[in-house]
Image (cartoon, rainbow, N blue to C red; front, side, top):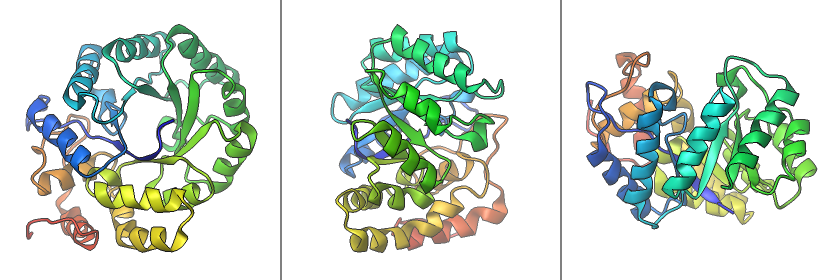
Length: 295
């Protein structure tokens, strides 16, 4: 089972939108050196919605090659077409990804029965460990705990990234699905509390820019050390908020560029961060102990 600080990694791009594989290798090496526990390749924070299927599969293969077995790679392979999700998941499996993360189908708003059949079809088609991903604020589709409970007994469905921010929801899923089913936070602001109540980690945006701190926060929370976890989270809590002042991954990509880690590229319809937010993100990075240049 994957545990701890799992980084929802951005996809580095040049100013014109071309993928920057050199920066990707540097990011992967950086996270290994900072003790991140796993990386999500081409998830929603990795701008999967702006990549074509060829780019998507190519990037998953490159993640696996660049990581070279040094850190687990969880491939984002969700889609609002079940056939496309199966194709992407098969691609990740054949590339050697350790697991796949599958966001609920967006826009077409399937019923709970449709969600169950969608994820069951993918799990039956591709024998790779799979993590469900529920983020209704972005997808307009909410996978209810009852549906998660129906899917939990499927052998290769191993957990869920629950990004509603509701601790009551997370507790409900834990009670329904048992200790062998991993519940991960997908909401940095409430991740500490979810892990203190038994969650297995945090699939994190904040970890892109503060990986060492997030790794230590996850370790402390998962061993039940509230005092240590709160001390770290206090440094990060403003960062948790400011990295969402515009749609993710706009702020986190700007922050990484400000840190000198990646070029400024992002693909339309996403745009670069509005100037009025620059200083607030710089201040949040400084409070978290992340070195940044002066404005």
